[in-house]
Length: 215
Image 1 (cartoon, rainbow, N blue to C red):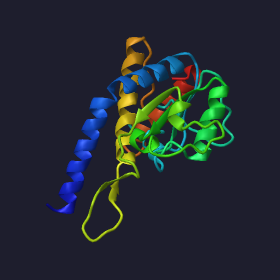
Image 2 (cartoon, rainbow, N blue to C red):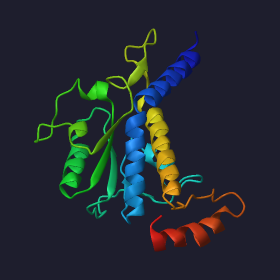
Image 3 (cartoon, rainbow, N blue to C red):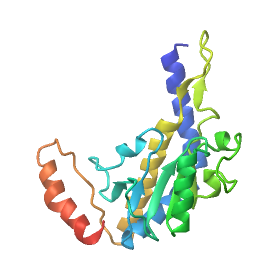
Image 4 (cartoon, rainbow, N blue to C red):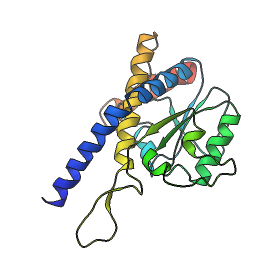
């Protein structure tokens, strides 16, 4: 079997595993985000698996209420912060999550549980990311990330966490959007700015509505 076929089949298996095992967590996180947005709180996405968060922030077809977390972002109690460490022990990420929880922020963690349970913590609390977060989403990546053995190459090939995390993040968003509609809130969904009329719609309708209502 050619490598492209092995890769694609591995991805199909990965996404199916995420779909089967993470449904409850995805629904919990989506509903929590909906509640936060409806309550006037902010939702910030920090780095998710090498910038996967950018597939959710200000994208055509996506909600306007996701904002990128920056170092100068002021987190407040009730806000939601999404963070990621595949190993669950990246010190800067665990520090951020730990400090956010102390402020009353609800932290959602993307991690690989298979990876996280195989490594030791480095945070002074003795905890890894999944032990700190309000909710953990397992991206189902194997320990050490890569999925495939390739003859002639020592290291394994094909990172798993990014594509799985993107799939899970959009699944969370789907739950959130549906819950908000059930609750009587119509979230601002952006149009593609490069499609005729899209930019005007975003600037004249979606952004002003978000500025006034937060959703």
